[in-house]
Image 1 (cartoon, helix red, strand yellow):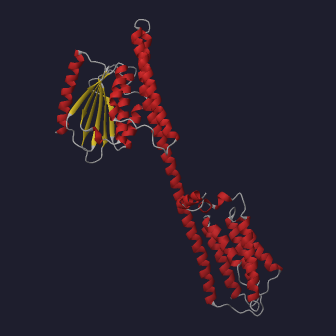
Image 2 (cartoon, helix red, strand yellow):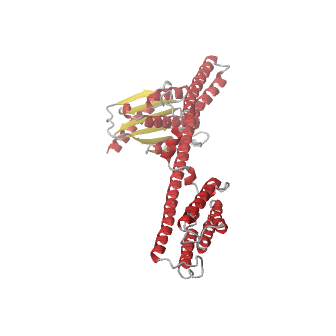
Image 3 (cartoon, rainbow, N blue to C red):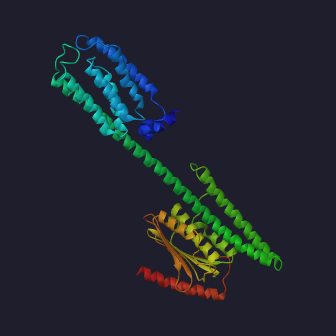
Length: 441
């Protein structure tokens, strides 16, 4: 309980002070009004004993006026304007009857305060001004005809003091109104920020699940087709396809469980590290099991990549290879990863042609890749090439001071290319070298 109270004060004022009075209009403020009535009646009785020679003693009518000035404040949440004018009118009649000065002004202050903080500033100023003007009329032009009989005109210094008291009441009410608006705006901003963080977290989870399931299901779909086609003619190959399906399903279940664990316990550290570029060989093997030969070229030092950038790069390559498996007629793909100063550059190419739709896919894959790159301040381009293939090109920022690439390495998928494919790879290797020279120039 103590921890909750401390957190509340750090978040700002209590909710009853921040919310507009209309939020609590369903219940009348009985406790505070009864307490105020007791203070007004007791204080006025004490003031009457002090002002015996100057004002009219309290009688039944005076006490009824005091009760009326307080009772109307029960409506200060539902009808703040009525409460302000009602308490001001009762106080004006009370003063015109010559009764003692005292806590009756407190009732006026509470009524006008409620009107100001609820947004009825003009009504509050008018009600307070009515009390002051009524007092001026009672103590100056009309004092000869109003009780007490031996009363004389009040000094203008007294009137200025009352005017200062009125202005102070309204100034305090205006200050509270402004602070309430600021607190309400701050609370609204905090709630909007919480909703925005929740939406971003849901979007992140959706991207993770999409990337994991789309890739694994694509591999499972290809392998199941192979298994059905070879079930009778080549049982051993069908068994290998079923083994690949089981491995892909097990890996997908593990990654989905990791995502769901993070969703159920957002405050706990993940049980397993997030995938990064060091797990690219797994993607190569999975693609090879689906019949796609993947060649990976790496330039630079991989240890300079932060975990968030590594995860985004891994998912972008995964989604690009998934699209090749699902939407391209090519059985080869080339992945080139370049680590440079301040950035990591990813390029995934296939030679097409597209089958059953665009090579890039028609779902949320490309949108998810763009969201991942944009979240890190990077860029991504995806589209068909002039020769009929498809290319995904992404650039992700790196922290300053990333080391220069010392050398190039090459890794090839477990599906061995043919001699013609080797020649094709060498042609593309020369193409990459020329393009790299043009970028350096």
